Image (cartoon, rainbow, N blue to C red; front, side, top):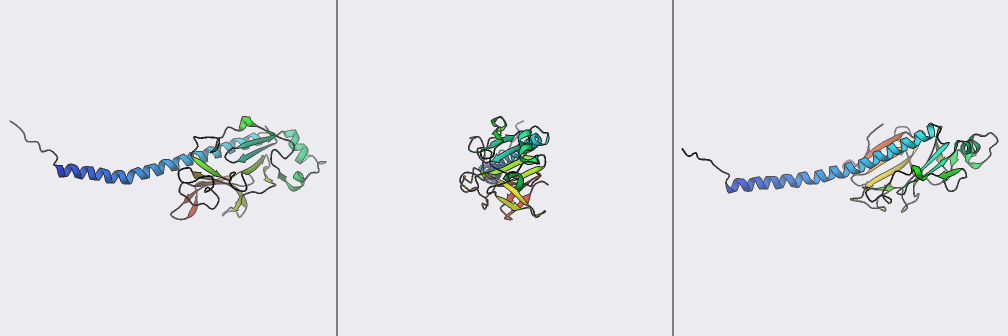
Length: 226
């Protein structure tokens, strides 16, 4: 016997197509946002891991000081244990860096040497595959976040720094901001910017790192760790 099989009517097919279109219109933009945020988030944690490695270089005694200049074209300067001792620890030493407990830019302070072997982290300008713009950068002042890492913690950089107060400690911390290339450029990515997919890391004098994500709906920075 022949059995009757009922197929889809034209109206039912159109309804299915309409529902798929509605779902795609909602889901695809959310998926794109999730992917963009994931890309920025990854680069934030790459920087945090990199800074932990440079901190280990100083804490292990491999170098007396490691200077990390966070900016699109990252730079690394290292100071030998001997040069660090002669500058900061020798009781007969009498210089502005020791007396003020500060450090200078790697090209300006005697005892530093450029260490390109450690410049393995590539950010926006030097890496076309990077998904982020960062601040500070050359379009602003200061042009970078300078970190002078020693066994005793961070020495304060003796020139202009971008800092803010940590809300939990009240102490000033250095900052470094990440913006997505999808909605910013090197000029619009700055301290006062408020865009989707923005992240910020702060660093205290012991290189304790906090990671924040900007919540545009609440217009506030949300702590992600610490």
